[in-house]
Length: 247
Length: 354
Image 1 (spheres, chains in turn red, green):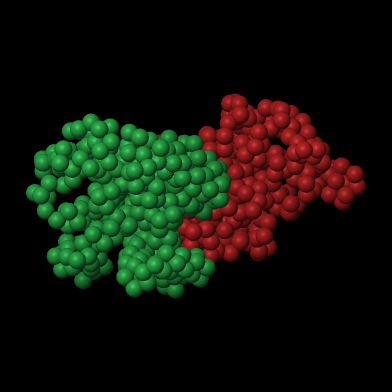
Image 2 (cartoon, chains in turn blue, purple):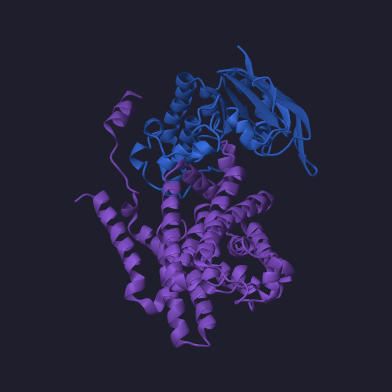
């Protein structure tokens, strides 16, 4: 299997806080990788560094072999690397279908393409994906009026609409009704299988990440603490200590 | 009769009323011409402030650029601008324009005004559209004032004494009526262009920027380019409106007519908010209500007009921030297409299978 994302010695500090210290990891194409760690361990900072929200202090990030650590957010997104946010972000004043339509990939489109009227094929794709996450009935409602969990599902559908090569999800099940969580796991797995998207998932819910991920990285205090298959991580004493606060 | 046909008839009725108005109410021609221009002001402001969420107090720059560029072109095609402006409008017998020259001047001047306004927007936009929220608002406020001051000190365009656009020859007839139809044509054109624009992905893109710009960027949208383009479109139509306004008012004062931040600059914001930010008809309705209020208060509250307008601004911003169309949308969401539907058979079968 080829490596789609390679992070080497990623380092980032905010003032005196070392959010990420020399973190190296890689994600293989088509894989579902997990990222766990206690609160404040630097998971979201690492995500933000990868997608270009803020520059790293030092280190290298390669996506499909190309160095992306000096690129801007939109440029990285157009290369097929998309993230979702921990605090769900959707376009609240627009309907669900409109949210979907404007999320379509910008990889091959220029500014002039935006002046075309909406095309039915895209609209069908949007509706199919909304059906995929169970929001078909609410497709003409303003996205801002949806519940938090539904917004989270919409954001996921928007990410799929973008047809990314790799999708980075920041806590996809946080705030979602426990009975819905299984269907979220199911949909993430199906997204990986049906659409061939590589997933990199931050998750606090151990049950979810153990079911989902094939390979897990664990951060603590801004450093990479452990990595391995889910069962190795579950039994790793350092990981258990980190979560229980022994450190 | 279906919905589309009813709408078409409605549009045609409005159009007919617009065409007939100068003959029905000849005493109000210049106010009605101004109203059409106000509709353009509000529509072009709403493109940026309402649909894109960038509260600009600097759109008046494009109005002034269009106004000066048009008038200067009208003069410059036939006379020396410097000599013309040195006469301070007193050269009416020397600098005459026959009807061919007058129309030619307008035919070149209005597009030049539009183009120059658009170029100004492209230049300023690439500088200031990186700023967001209140920073952008304050910065554009400064741009408007700076532009006024520059015009105020520029001798070639008449400086603080202002500039008088060319005198219309008698063949043009009633000047207010003449420009009424220009203004109406521009307002209708602007409306139709924006209506089309909001139905494209560009419309969705600027809405996305309004709702969450960081998200739009993280989805790969070229946000800066989109924002600058929107400002250019806004400036283009506002530039033409400026050219018409200058000729309608018959005098261009750098600070009070061209770069009139405290009046036109604020009014365009107010009209859009009053009618409903981010809706297509909102700015149109807002402009009508505002112009009627302004003219009525001018008639009945002489001396207190500005106080009444100030009070209106405060009342609208505090008690009615969503505007007329915004209020209606909250009350009757289904009318605006926001509705819940039953699951499609496809979705249901997928659910069961899944």
